[in-house]
Image (tube, helix red, strand yellow):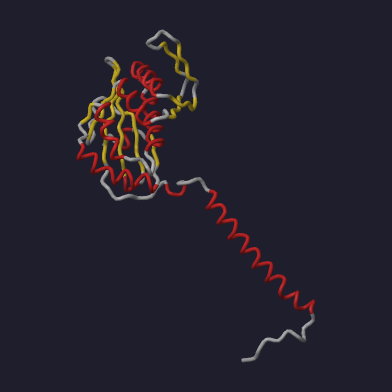
Length: 231
């Protein structure tokens, strides 16, 4: 095989050959570098929102009661699709399990979890609380502490505003279904705050699924009841 020799080729001609090649190499390095930076700087979990997890779907009827008024929401955990579905449901909706909360139960659970919950209000909400003070919240994204969430849900139940209950559920799931959450400790708080047919052995079976979903990433979607639950 003959060796390639450039000694007899002028410097100008050598540059004519090598400069375009060098430019292509540098361009490729730049593209790869930018791609890696974008992947590193991407919001955590953004690319993991549909990661599948092994487990059977579970539906839960979540009911909030205030005096004679009741708001019913349907919740379905779909591990294999990496999502949790929420919908406004009719009063006769029955899931695999049911959780019923009153204002005191909502307050108790949110105090247990900690620093309140984000809620999106479609319209401004105002009411007079038990002490006779006027409370008002603007439309849009607000963060509610435990007592505020309980009061707003009481008002929402009386007015039939299921969207508020759905938004609170969505905010709670996104806030508290986190990879390092000690789910095994949560059952006692749920049992103390709610009337439910979920038992400790049901809950323990779900802990591995909840942990895997939190680690893999998941989405929470509000959907039409008739399309996803009514069949």
